Length: 183
Image 1 (cartoon, rainbow, N blue to C red):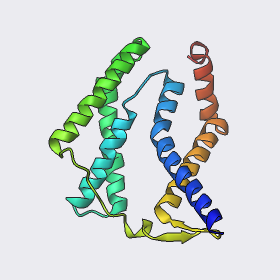
Image 2: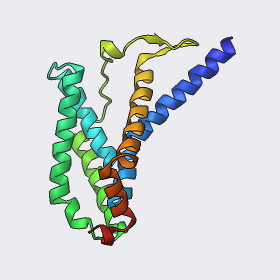
Image 3: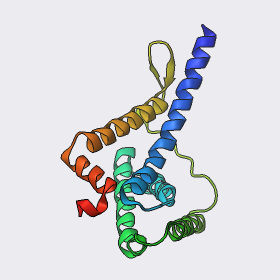
């Protein structure tokens, strides 16, 4: 039975790690697929949101859920400013220009975080709600990893429902398939 537990543990760990990559990369798929814009800076925005959460919790002594809301709001606000001031100028530019700009933006984000916070990791203990293990029937596994898997699946289902089962989704798909016709 130990062999089965080890395999289940490895599979769950792989799925949890895959969900982290999916959650970060889904932004690239959506922006490229729907907007036709190659935005390689989506990981940089995820990094800024993560640092905002960590700093709010460590330096602001704010709980996990409010820090999560602050991180989301701050990242969304910065994204809106960047979209208006920077990205809007590149919508009709060649893909190479979009790639070069967004990679440059990532370098600026990394340098800004390194200069303002430092190059070292910012460890943060998990909130009590995500600590410990949960019994899955066949194995006890890290609660945090199980939550990552559940959130990733919820995002997949939400995106699928939004794009495939709503009127807005049908309009977006029509615009992507034939932008001139949709206009």
